[in-house]
Amino acid sequence: MLVRIAIACWGLALGIPALTVAALASDLKPEEARRFVAGKLFAYNCFEGTTGMGRINADGSVAGTIRMRGANAARYIVLPANTVRVQPESICASVRGVPFQPCFNIVKTSNSTFRGSVSGFGFAYCDFTRVNPRLRMAGGKARERAVKPVELADGAAE
Image (tube, rainbow, N blue to C red; front, side, top):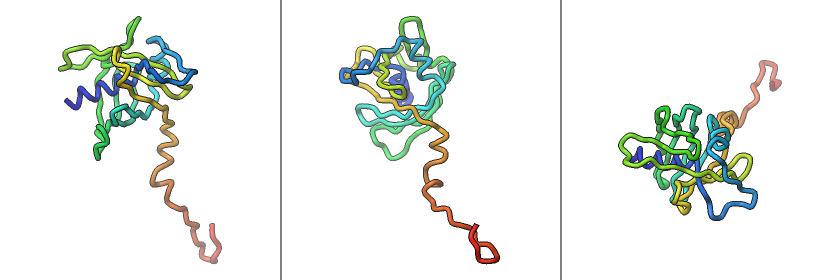
């Protein structure tokens, strides 16, 4: 069950026809969406409270975290190559054990954001924001700690 939900959420990463997207929004064709999304790290927030962060690689594999509806702990997921497939007219996901192959729409809302949904279910969407992994590594608790000057033997600070 968790894998199915994760696939749906990650699939949303590749598509969403939103009813209320900014005026500058534009629908992306499958190949445009692949170039916009593949290999980049995105944080996402879904309409029902699911959040996470991850990346869809050029080979269609997926790796990242998912936190279901505000649950306490995020779970790390990895899905194999060809899970997400770019076809001439659509972007679809293929997951073992899921009886159907969901397809997705993507609406680019800015140069670093998009909104996605399963085709035919525009009410159920996720918003994705590109994240710079280098800034994330430099941030967090390590950055919050104050750097204290080192006292030298002569009493001067370095």
